[in-house]
Image 1 (cartoon, one colour):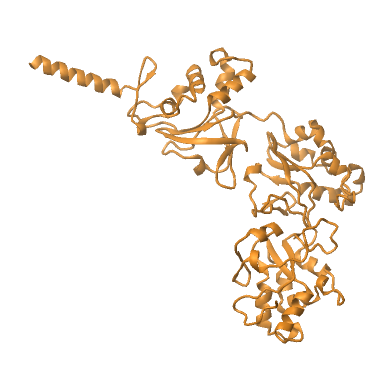
Image 2 (image 1 turned 180 degrees about the vertical axis):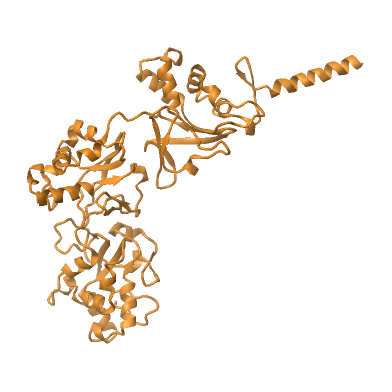
Length: 487
């Protein structure tokens, strides 16, 4: 009986020792979920979707780098962006191989390394969301992984590769991707010099002396590039763009300076992928003025460009990203106060006159304050709107209103966001400088439909250096002002 007990005990000890061993002849034994390393997670928790990538890890010896012996604390932690079999197989075929075993070992090793990022600390795991957007150096020398998030907080690689799922391992995280991470081969300058669609833009860049900027590997930038035809014909009446961007038209110092400002308005510092360009978030250009999308994805211009990105992430360069536009952009030249001063004053045409609004701004001192505010939207009532308000309250002129009430009214017309007409039609509430919220969808009445540069007063989406102006046909009243609202 004692011998039987000894045999049973020996068998139990053997099983325990066998279970504690991580590998025997290359076979991975099942570890508890919380004890699995990156290699085990890909083997056990991914339905075989990464068998080719796992074979590549095995052949290159990188599986040892991503493995941790049972019971051991990880010496390093990693994030692995693992291409599934479809993606990895397509890559091999593109390189001229039909299987992992046929691939050149150097090429295979560098390819696998390009999908692995070593976390800066071995103390704890970090998710991609905890890393945030940015460029991260992979295990392959000179190859970075570009991580960005879309407007809903979903993360992508290189602006297009969707991260399908996330699995935590003992020594890091595994993310599934349906593409492979490739290294950009050219600089921004090389791309625009080689693509025929960018020929005119390339000439303009050379004229402005900005080629060196786009060659510089120490500076990462994002370009918005309009096509050749609109650059050559941008002053055509049907287009309505006020400046002809034919390179032949820029020769004097003044003309070159103007061209330089226009081109810098098409460039954002940093690597900005299209999925990350969210509505109502300003992006400051190299000119110092911001670009901003409206709620429908149109990029705002001096009045309203209605310019859209036709090909997002058209190119990913060594030093940036290129997006194709359908129309050129134009930076603003005036601030809000300067633009208000230019608006017409016509007694005979109160629906297209702003004399009373100018008086109200001056009386309250808000005209001066508008030069100090940034990224705001001014709702500017017409003379007719003020006439209706005065009549409803039996007041003869704007000067007969108490200054404190007039101040609250005018501050109620300054919104603390740069908003385009589409934004105003969609936003539920917006905070005003006066302190109360306004509900644009129900409170604001517009005078004109959106129009291009041809509108002489620019009544819709007037984009200025420090904000926007929208013209309205009814004076809005905050709750704190005891006045009768005009019909």
